[in-house]
Length: 93
Image 1 (cartoon, rainbow, N blue to C red):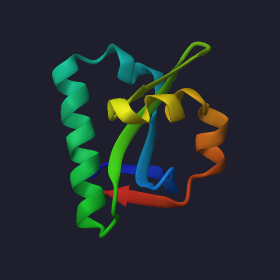
Image 2 (image 1 turned 60 degrees about the vertical axis):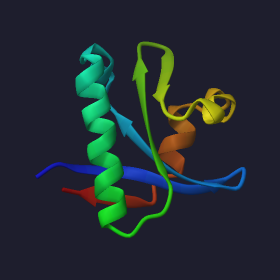
Image 3 (image 1 turned 45 degrees about the horizontal axis):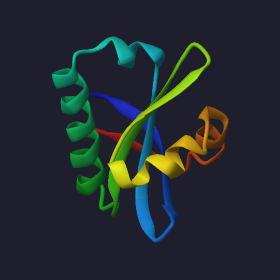
Image 4 (image 1 turned 120 degrees about the horizontal axis):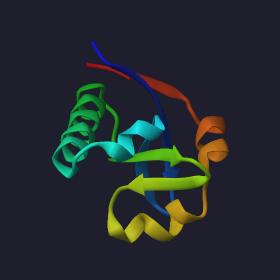
């Protein structure tokens, strides 16, 4: 049963479910990445959380993310320290 800590926040009028994953996530295929994003989104909704899921990961010194295009400016403004400081929930599925 997968378990992941998330930051469930309300930013810029949007509910966001930010899921930090390890750096190896960037090595997965696009299909695997999309599948993981869908699984996190489904688990969040099953847990009664509102919002859209975003995946973030650190590859070396580079902060990467996968989420809605309209959120890219916000996601570029944060880093993994910010995400870690905002972890406030855990999801299991």
